[in-house]
Length: 333
Picture 1: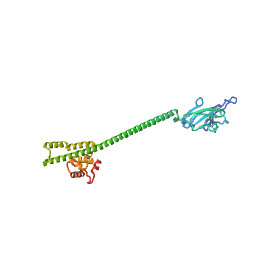
Picture 2 (picture 1 turned 90 degrees about the horizontal axis):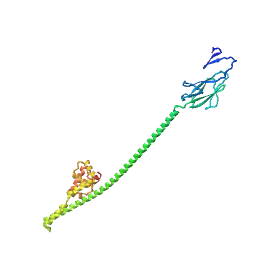
Picture 3 (picture 1 turned 135 degrees about the vertical axis):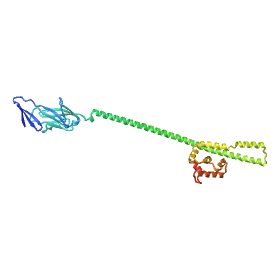
């Protein structure tokens, strides 16, 4: 469709817009045709303009677009071509499109050229995506630096904790070793003291037995009247023997020393067997010292047979078999 706009001007309806045709007097000089950049239309529908120096700055999300342009004087013989110098030196035909299509242009500066009756040059700058901007890169560096500091501090702390734990473990092992050495020393000392105590007790018991026999013999001699001892001499000898007969004191000395050597023995035995009497505990102590019935009997002022009866009753209280070894049992307490 063609419409008359005014004298010498016509409007031609086109498929994509319109054209104004000016018919001038041939006698008038025709001005040179120029190519003008109209706009940039992004795929999202945003309309972007060039500045006075034919430079357009686009965001990264606007990197797919169309460049619209027109020529001031229509020429049916003009065929337009374009190229992007940074990407391709080949000229590309426009065909019948009224724009230059560009898709997914990477970030950077690009020089476009359009060739018609002459070559027109313009620049399009596509910004870096936000995740590659200077602020984003700075943030990345700060995050990396922070993560590095965090990892460094974490492993420093972990290393210090491991060193502290190792030092504590070493201290514990050393302390336990010292305790073990000290326990071994005390055990050895206790064994020595226990043997010394047993020997001293046997010696005292034997001394008291011997003195008691001498005393009995002197009494018998005194009764028979067949002697050469005066009454005064007899009284002096009896006094000395009585002064050395310290059976009860020897027993008390033994019990106090035994508890010093075996502090936990009586406590464990009483706790596990509350029915045991003081005499049972004393007999248990003598058996633990590995004294024989013959050695223990005089301490209780009973015969060996009587002591065997006491051992039998002790087994019953401890719920042991008749053939159970009391020495082995008490050494396990």
